[in-house]
Image (cartoon, rainbow, N blue to C red; front, side):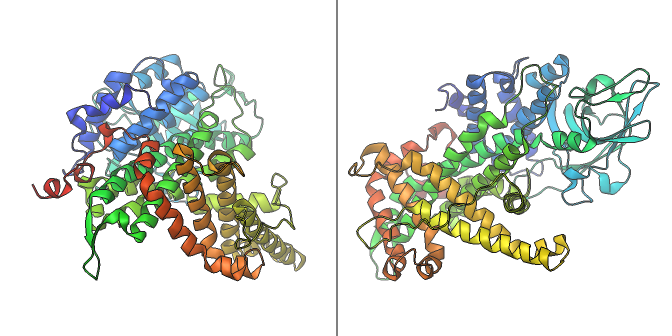
Length: 587
């Protein structure tokens, strides 16, 4: 539930028009950031607090994403991707207070332009200088430039977390994190920092840039050492004991992004539905026979919008499950080992699942609004900019799915669904167990992938080549696994108890949305389920009709569904949010 005072922050006229009109729209973005910091800034960041404070931060991020996706992008990088590792890896209290107060705006400089998946092979170097007892930060060439952080706007003090390969006495000690002032109090680039602004982009427009370092001096206290140290005699010590473990720990700061990004993506999906579902109840349409009806009375609109609502609420349920884990900071900070690899893998899959659900939800809302869904004044295209950006930002979705598939098929942390479990067949008087249907397909894909890799190994094929031959199956397997896990979670929360009769109120809406998601997960593979004997041919053929009927039953509950979205009026802007959209679009 959103804190009742937070929506008031977005009633200020500064949020009335966030559409990117000017050549430098990010100027307004940073003005709105200052507006928020002036009201929430303190020496103690919300991320450092307990569950109540972290829930407040999540609510703030959700509302910001709904009101201004570009501002959300800046805010989460500051609050989570800068303050998060600063706390977790042991920054000084003075630097934490500087960031928490908003005196400097945080940034995260990790990805390098010249190498895909560069997080695992950072080339920016931090060389220990024993004479100065500090570090010298250098980009060896243009390919090692950090790209594309949003740090191009002059006149704004910036304090960034920078990943770099630490070298002490010529020895590589893996990737470490450093706090580096990119711009000082006057907003000019710091000595040795080269910031090259990039041209404005159309979607999610911010002050993106490429950043290189040329002998930048970093004092010892701004090394986010996380328990590592260099003695005055020049001896290096790391409690992790292995550069590979240190690199894994350093790249693990992505968890702070995943906790924030999933909240923001789910929020824009909810806001999109909160805009478009009531609009469809007011928008008049005419069909080829001249019949005039409100858009929401049309079956195609019902499938688009109720499907969008189901995805938005599913994305929210999934995202809110991982906030506490993503943002967990051990007491004391600066002495951790990070989250276990299995937990990091699960968080990565959640990021992918939420982004896919949110992107599909916003895309459906845009489609339901016709041409109006394209224009920035109605916010939907801005929401989709955010969901599109995070297909790659925060970790590439496809690569994370493939990594998950590899870990499941080769590791020992995954147990495939049991063989031989068969769902009750629809058409026999019973509703099929949708989770068992999804489990059956997941197991089949797992067995296909595992058998192919075993066969390749027995034939002496090179492992990399064998894996790349199976990428389609691997991605389908990972997607099937995530769909099954998500639906199982929603079944526990949304599905009515067997024999409980028709559910009313909020429970009835959620039960209808659960059935809709289940039908849409099974429908694209109906022929496979029929061929496998898991659905009768008649049941498989009738899935589309069942989907239409499920949506039709939700029409009278549209208003109740909008209430479930928890979207305050203060963040809904633009003509589609108004009662008289014709007047608002033409005045």
